[in-house]
Image (cartoon, rainbow, N blue to C red; front, side, top):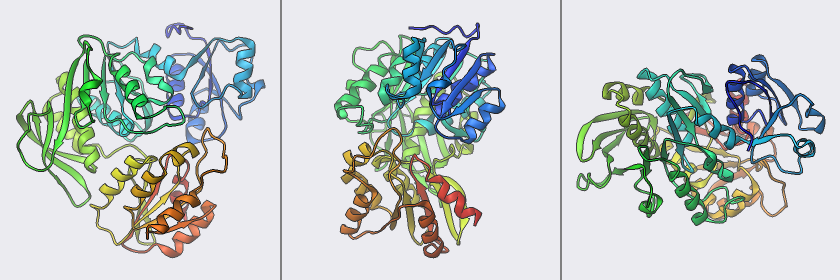
Length: 466
């Protein structure tokens, strides 16, 4: 495998440079004096930022983008072998690394590389732990799959031994990482275009946890079914966490426990924090929902290992209100409060809508854009059940991402099943039609949520312009 020497800059070319993780790596290499080029199908704020920092970016992946001066090419799992630009890379036999391999090479340079994994909640927890360390003066390097308001970026270069890394399981890319510490937030069915089933996904997370060496810390959500099987025969120290919502007995069942959980008028969690059965204090979060109470415990477990002062940690937990596109408040439209959320699988939808129900509202109106045909088809009943938590559902067309429509699934299918179950549901084939409908339909007191991992955020942005 090609080895990058971060002290000897070369020309690195990124296939899909505008991706949230790829753009962060490109930023890092630019800061270290590398020549950076790349290509992407779409222009975006991230692409424009890279151009301003000195990257050469082509729109459209074409064979002619591969020039003689390129030393190594970086690609992601979304780039198919028949992609014309990738085919040219292989024809020329240029050195290549996957995004995960490049991240792994980078992690080797940090004595404390913390990998945060899970099918849900990675971005928020990475952002939360990053801000805890930043606020406490630990000056970490950060790679996260979203924009953290505290640094207004998806990547930060620090000057310390600490590196906080969002660790994605898709195509098993996180198995190329070198974490000294790691978190496993949850394990659920997702990315079934790559994984065979839930057991296959669990096996990948088990292998990820096994990457943590002796002396390292593996933090595991104790509410994961059979969570003990994830860390048998590993050398790292293991800490578990979980929620106690019914009574105060059994608070020693996990190493870190949230008990006496309450929520304020905006759905933000408050709880008593127990460590090894001992009450540490009361925690007030700036994040909404039960799922973020759980996520905060994982961040706390790592922060405690590194002796972050409790007073500093408590302040960071309250001040951090989330990353962009994670139940992000956008503004007021027609008297309705407008939020945007990245939720794109049934568990994430359930978590977001559960949190939303704690908000004062007349109706919850969810504008949902499914992400990928394979996910929608594989989890169709689960999507219908999750979306049924909303008072009204407006369906946008499926965002294809890396896939091709084979005609076997559509957003109309989801709408029809919701309607069959008695839910008020609509489908529109264009964002313009959705915007026109919401202009007439939404009103004061409604809670309006645009939701999905594609470009559905543009609907809310356009509404607020009108």
